[in-house]
Length: 147
Image (cartoon, rainbow, N blue to C red; front, side, top):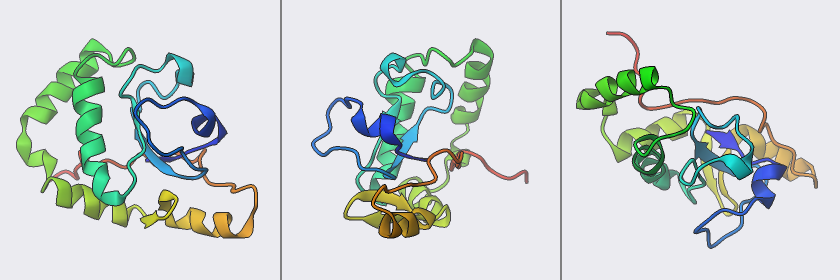
C-alpha cells in the first residue's frame, strides 16, 4: 500500500471516474514503482475506492500486470512467484483476508477514498494535505510467517 503523492494525483489514470485525491491509498507493483509514472505499464497501479475493493485490485495487479510481464520482474523472481502462487494455501481466505489485512495495516474508508489512519490527522490539520506517502508500507497478504 502507498499514499498518493502529487505526481500520482496529476497523472492520467486510465478508466477512472473520480480523480485521485492527496493521501488516497493505492496498490502498486513493488517492482516497477521505481519507473517514472509515464513509463509504468498499464495495470501496475490501482486506487480502489474502498477497503473491500483491495482484493480485486490485487487480483487485477496479478492478472493484468505480473502475469502479463512486468518489465522489472526478473525471470528468477518469476519462477519463485509461480511456485508460491501455485500453493493456494498461501492465499488465505480470499476477499475476507485482504480486507482484514488492510484494516490491520491501519487503512480506513473515507469519502476521499481509502486512507491510512495516521494520515487522517494530516488531512484535518493542513490545507496542503501532507501525508506519509514516502513511507514504504509494503504489506501483502501473500507474505506469511514461517510455520
